[in-house]
Image (tube, rainbow over all chains, first blue to last red; front, side, top):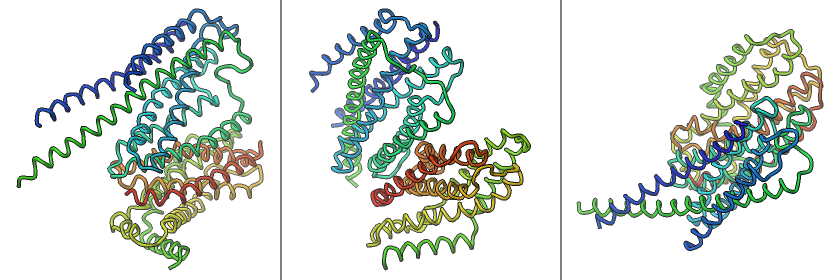
Length: 40
Length: 228
Length: 224
């Protein structure tokens, strides 16, 4: 039943991809905040 | 609110694990379709979650048009993005299910088609938000959300009638459902709802923070420029 | 000047400008002809099944043409800062919207009138159902495309890649109307089903979105 596993794996790949995108934006935001703190 | 986050995260992890176990192992095997039917435990709750998120987007958009509160706009954006993610899951798992069962990748199944249209509407919503260089993008996006919401019942009826004239396979099977299956389905729905809440909340928080940083950066550049 | 007076004046101006330049109608004709000719290669006019897909093909051609017309709806206004003038004038924004929408409706209807004889010839079309209903479907369907198209054209006026934005926004929202138009046309041509449900759906669609557009246009105008 490879279709079954394909579906479940696909679901989590999509969710993890989005979470990875969020994490990337958070880290970028953190560095920007550090920049601002430094300039102040 | 911040203290609730870790608690919700743990609850989500527990529910998701239990839901997964239930879906793959403890739920009874369906008679006609066999194990492939288990995709149902992920496909259906994802659809319900996506629809709920889009409804949240509609409410946030209307609130924004009424009060012009930027937080409402941030919530609208967050719920739209997460909604599209869940919609994508539905559109991917649907054909994966349809193929072994019906031999075709796509069918004008009512729920699947409605999900496709909503996906298209909200992808265009997100593209509008990204590409609009008007200062009032949130207003335009909110108007688009309302148009999308008005469209939904019309889509529903048009597909419903189309199916009566051109009979199509139904994904998810009709008829009554075994209570043990219903139990697993609801567990997974609760699990994905909690998961969606976590993700949407994070995206909302990210958006608020992101806007504060932008404002601070804009002020920075003003201060730097001014000694001329 | 009264609001209907403004509508009529704006409409008259747009029609006059278009009559002189024929910009929109030429572009529309080109796209529609392109679709007709290319599809006619894959079309066997004597086959019975062809009648079933003719409905879809006809509306693809009209849809392409409509998008061309819609894309240039606000271009002139944008170039000459007319929108700013409208924003500060006491004229109701609905008048402007209505004038633009009706203008587009006229352009697309003229195109449909020009193209229909071509379709009948190329695809050997003959309606097996009640042919008069085709006019009703054409009018309702064209208005559905045009009313939302004019609205979304206004929304995309200040976006990057404006020409992509309009079809991107328009297509998902018009899916029920497109389905209704194509199915109604096919039903009438093949005579297999009654098109009544689709016509009712188109009426409902037109009413809902005309009201929504009139109600919300002011927000969009102010938002530019």
